Length: 340
Length: 288
Image (cartoon, rainbow over all chains, first blue to last red; front, side):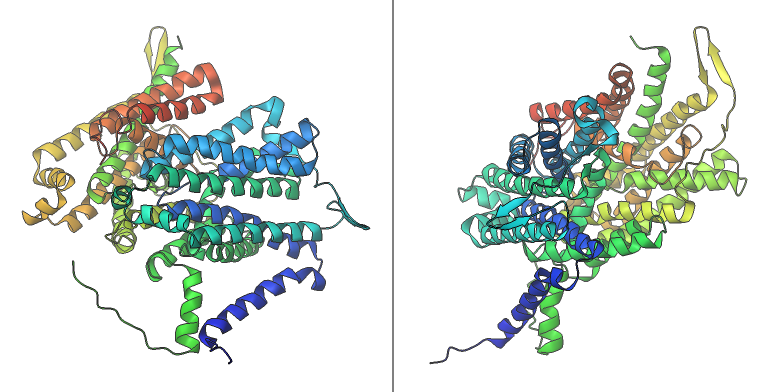
């Protein structure tokens, strides 16, 4: 017997699948460096935004995700340039170092949580920038470290060379985004993800149910730190340079804006959509050469999303509502809202 | 021991951080949120004074008042049309307000760079002259900053302790529900408090305008410093904000004299240590 096909569920997912497939086979149509680098950079920001969303799931508001990108980038840059290590081990070490810093900072600061956590992570972003700027013998100060592209991979007779073309970077980023999205999505679906949401919704109740607040917060912060470190390492090696001002406070806030505009209701989809749209939009705006218009419109976009979309949702939710209201023309179900 | 000039510079910085942190804590005690845009109101206040003095030729003391009124009004608009609508009474409500005010940092800096340009602007010394005190000398401008801050603090003390509005603010800060039962409109009070807080930031910016350069990005450092001052003093404590501002202002200049740029790392470490030892800050009530 033919199983019942819920077309209202399948069609939107198919459209998303086709869009993803289109992005994945993009290098078949164009190998234009500019087009590909827009997607690579937005993929990198998407990973960082996913990390932010994961920390936000536990109700904590990190303003220092840029610091973890900088940590990852600098770790890998120092290992490859100063110590002459190959790229791939240092790529993983970058994530591990960034994760360890997140674990240490988190296990200290997440005790107080809330606003204090935001302020301290903001301070962390500044501290990392100042150290990168001042520790001249190792980081070369504001001149930055010049990194090399990843080493070529030899698969059978095929050699994947990062130095000659942008396409390997593109597929590397796609893989990294896909792995991160898969892991984060699985975390969100699992018992761990529900615990995250629980301790955000009502910390007191969650604690009385026997959940260890600190443990879940630190887990979320550390996992986010590891993947943000990977993203930072990729960023440094893609741009082949890392300077203190590349990943500072404003980049942390940009990560926050991408996550919020994309929608924090989903751990993977929202940040990816937000990063791709806002990064592309930002590139377009920076070509206009009107200084400040990018900040102005980014700021306005967040405020508008918060004002006019239902609370806690972003563009991801708009997508579902588009199908429900415009395509299927469903009647809005109005639940009774009890007055409290 | 650093020279006297460093201590005077520390006093000047204490004055900014104190005024800024005071406004921030005042807003926090009524609205229950931190206004992350505070530094940008400081920046806009400096710009209003700059244009009032150079373009319109208004005397400096009056332009400070104009900037306080204009930026206070802007703060009221932000509270009325953004913060009030974004905040929802739930655990996530404060989060959305945080996001919105951080987004406004971008918005105001972008607007300022588009309107006023990114290059540094300088206001000529309004009070020329130097007071010579034997081994060292102080410019009248710096003395004016200190006196002005003292006047603001004394005014705020009188307003908070000896007027009806001050009584209402203190009551609403302690028990919002009970205060509204006694006929205090907490909504209207939040508008007033937001106006006062932003006006304080604007006045800090305007009194500093002749001493430092004015550009769209000057708000960041005072904002971070006053945030740290609040953390040191304790979230929600007005005395704590003043003491925290003084500590940070002096530390910032005195430690910077010995360690140059690494002084900021020392400051952040100090704040982290204070948070570890006493999470509620020096003067804060214990955490919920």
